[in-house]
Length: 417
Ligand code: EPU
Image 1 (cartoon, protein in one colour):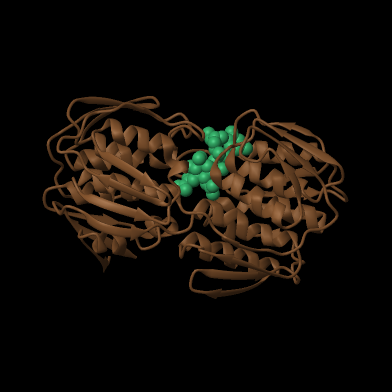
Image 2: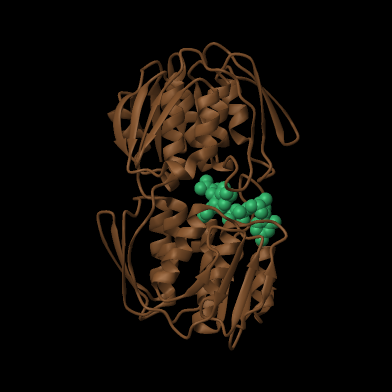
């Protein structure tokens, strides 16, 4: 396994292109199961989670070709209805195959993903929704076993907005008989991106991007050629890196409209953020002001940016409060940041952060993707050298973060652990 070594204190400067969005690419690649023939996906980020998805899809019978950031998938040979534990446990998003398998093969056997570092992450709403579409669902020996000779449209209300839950139901409903109404759905750009791809495949969906979607089932879909939207979390992570190092960074190929909450909060810290088309320029403040943040479903402040923003607040002037309302255990980075000299106290879902003038480098490690990214950011601003271990988590969701930061002038490299 690799580790990343960062020596802090370098001001980030320059221009860098943002990669395609992990959390859009995963459901969109999986939606290839819904039609026969070759689909083409461009701007697919090169990530471990994408590799895991390809293994999962080929295990189900799909044919896959990759050329740089273009992935082509043909689901003509998709006849296997089972997603085994060994594939699902590597990536929770694997549960997204449940809807398409059920829609196309009438029966599915998919391993339950289990808990993960950031929380229990149940899938009860995915299952309740599929049951409302007429699926008979059993939980046996750690697997979801679902059967539905023909899925039938129905009204579904989500008690909690869920990103992958909405996506799973969307992929099941597009081929169901009749009309499905999904209420209180996730409005994340990645959900809308999936709906847009499904519409290009011939699905009849209205309301994507709002809290209610209406899906009129169609008998079959056709393959597509599409490009994956930019990763708003990678964009936000690099924006924080610029602010933290008092740098001046231009991000290209991004979608500023997907980052309104993050941009708003960054401006309150004193950073200058200028957006123009698909470019964002961030200039770090001389002194970071403290700002309170509460994570919420989109368009609120993203939970996937909470750890990175906390690093910024750990070096701000004064006190800030960060509340995490989406996942019950997403403060994994706090104990590691404290080892780097941060002054953070947690009480329930709230962290009280008292800014310190500077963090100090230390060996650190995290068991979650965004927490790992936050430790790399902390290393950029810390005095001395930080070793971030278990980089595996970072590679699941960031395309060459270390290389991109090095191009911006960071003193960062990778070594074998
Ligand atoms: N929830 C339930 N029951 C369900 C589903 C969700 O109670 O059946 C709860 C969860 O426990 C959580 C809340 O609903 O408290 C929201 O979870 P959601 O289902 O929206 O999360 P997810 O779909 O599993 C996606 C992203 C995450 C991101 C969250 C929140 C993908 C592949 N993953 O997860 O991304 O944090 O939405 O925005 O899209 C990451 O990229 O690092 C990451 C964890």
